[in-house]
Image 1 (cartoon, rainbow over the protein chains, first blue to last red):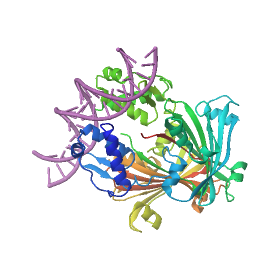
Image 2 (image 1 turned 120 degrees about the vertical axis):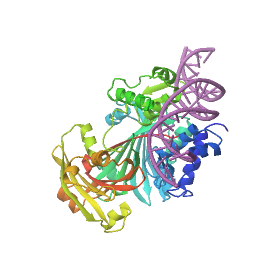
Image 3 (image 1 turned 180 degrees about the vertical axis):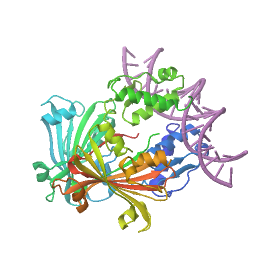
Image 4 (image 1 turned 60 degrees about the vertical axis):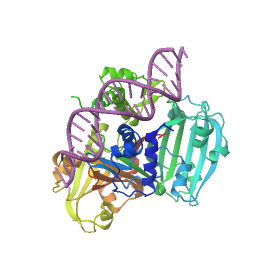
Length: 238
Length: 238
DNA sequence: GAGTGGTCTAGACCACCCA
DNA sequence: GGGTGGTCTAGACCACTCT
């Protein structure tokens, strides 16, 4: 158990802060104290504290110490890399997933472009409607490369594609790029979602990459305007 | 010049990648090589590489090396902490700022709540309309605490509040929390922006904190739907 | 086995903050 | 001046990848 001391420290404090056991404003032990407590050195402690700082849990002040922020607790929806399943577990409201489509199709032009493959190359298309509190407010359209994912079923899609890809297939999702914009609702949007007459939808385009930097999934998450929220924590680089 | 070797390395490579001098897929020198090149040690080089990785410039692969990504170049609008002035310089399209209001007012209930001050406490209210390619597409409403910012004029608002606060007043902006949602357009939105009949606007609420963790500014940036875009880079924590 | 990145150690010096 | 965080050094061992 000598490995990843810094991750242990990070996880322990992230937990303490997220559950509210450590109130905002609380001063953390100094780096030297923490080093002694965990039987390690300052550099290792600093790795943990920097992670906490980047993720909005604490703030470090020169000459003063590290302090708990009241921001890290509000972690939610679409920030970072998180699946709908993980999200719905966090927000704790009744959700349901309806799988509309799970099939291998010939990539249409726009999808081929996004995935950087030839038009009409085979791709998995998974279309899912997400219901929150009995309203169909999100339409998720996933496109996956058959080279990386040989099998895809409605059962898998009903659960979590992330879980399947990471746990069953053993692929490692590494990073993603997300683009958020607002676009006119399509006929498909109107058919599959409860749009309540709203003319536009929020479109979140997600490009997911594996550890070997290959792009393997493109996801288009279409949200009803009034049910969309995104929160971001930013730290000034200096 | 012994200070911040790792920032020098970071900046040099960020520049090389952003300008395209290093093409996507290029392998960087190994950490040991870089350490030798810069006359430093591996830990210091690793700080630089981790920064590059977090910001989407490179990807590190165990046992293989570090490789240039083609994502870091697309840096744009609202990600991170960046002012409209910095942004407009990046996108290189003709922009103009129209200052509608610069005055000290008594905080209305919602603003007081956001800034965590008593209702009717004095705050600076700055209202600016942003024109991009001769269309009024963004309405920025800024509220600043008089304790931190004693003076505010239309001239300052026409330039950059960030520059004024950081360079003239010497305050250090440290981090911010951003919330993005879509809301119905108000009468004020319709009056000040060219909404083209669109019924909703994208609202970006920005809570800006100083280095001593005091909240000193609340900004509401209201965007016309079709001109809004947000890009995010996310890395899976493991 | 050679090369790579991931983690860690045990020091060091500095700039900053506060009493 | 004592405590704090910021940076850096010169090593070490490990896990992984490639050939």
